[in-house]
Image: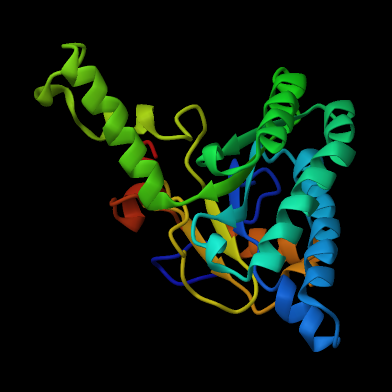
Amino acid sequence: MANDDLTAMDSESNVPRHIAIIMDGNGRWAQKRFMPRTVGHQAGVKAVRKIVEYCATHNVEVLTLFAFSSENWRRPEAEVSLLMSLFMATLQREINKLDRNSIRLRFIGDRSAFSEKLQQKMAEGEAQTQNNKALTLVVAANYGGHWDICQAFLQMQEKMAVGELKKEDINEQLINQYLSTADLPEPDLFIRTGGEQRVSNFMLWQLAYTELYFTTTLWPDFDQNSLEDAIKSFRSRQRRFGHTGEQVLNKSVTL
């Protein structure tokens, strides 16, 4: 148990509704084994399957994976090309499996930089799985938190230009409605593997009150036991959202 400010919450029912993960360490995992970085990315796909399976069977509502950031285009051209090919191959192989297991697939990010074929496959995956209920799997691809906030304001500017919005209408709730995650709960738990301790332009608006968890485990080695450790850490924390610990303990506020 924790101190007066932090009360352990170890009930099995206390599962994060939304888990967001930066899957870091694929390249280093391969380099430690004297293999090309591309082998690490392929191993990372196997880790994704394990984590998706866990979330789908443990009442997690949303799992968001940072697959490709808007900054990742700066990587060597050969690695980016491999990532795009792996992305396409994974979609072709996994969409039917996701559908059979009632997992809804969503993408967030600027798709315009991807090939038309890849954009079409992304749209097909979303359409095929749109009515599934077991888990919403959100893949952030060519995504950045700065981009997300900017595109929200551009949408609002367009509404203001035709008189559908006024400056006085803009508040936090309205901005939320124009983010790429507007229909999703905000993340409860953020996980970053690979040892780095930063959010790297990922869901900057949405992570305001998210519990952060960092691990040195490289992504291909991050398995269901690793995820359980992260959830155990989440359960040990008292989420106050600006209230005092006493208010939360006495249930005098609604979080």
